[in-house]
Length: 168
Image 1 (cartoon, rainbow, N blue to C red):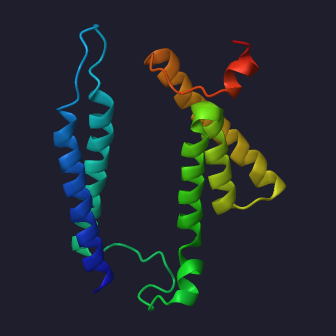
Image 2 (cartoon, one colour; image 1 turned 90 degrees about the horizontal axis):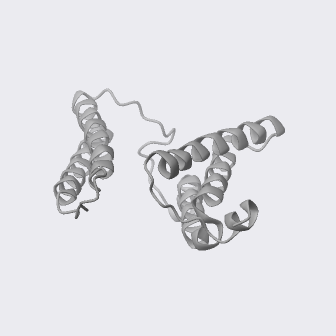
């Protein structure tokens, strides 16, 4: 199966999943406390995913996708399978570690660690890169945490460490 055909199938599966999730988002119960509907955030994210899925589908049908893996259609055997998929597997393991430590670290600390470790895994671990990774992780996760906590008034898991740090 050629790369373009696999991309077309992947785009169609992504669009079907996104469409089903968007349809199910209408069943999210709303509260009558005068705030924004609970389905707004999922529907916003799903709308962006839908647009990106359509772009992916159009590119795959036009055949304009650039192959990003050097060994492309080379057969995957047991010896090179782990090496080929090492980064995605490690990123997934980091995410599961984030989920497992969420009750202790909370969203803010755990999220900063997740982004920092993922960027370090993929982007290198030189002194300059580590500083950049730390600044990007703190700014992005701290910013998103502040938006959810203060602007949207969403209570995120704070874990056990953050209350000790801020003195609650």
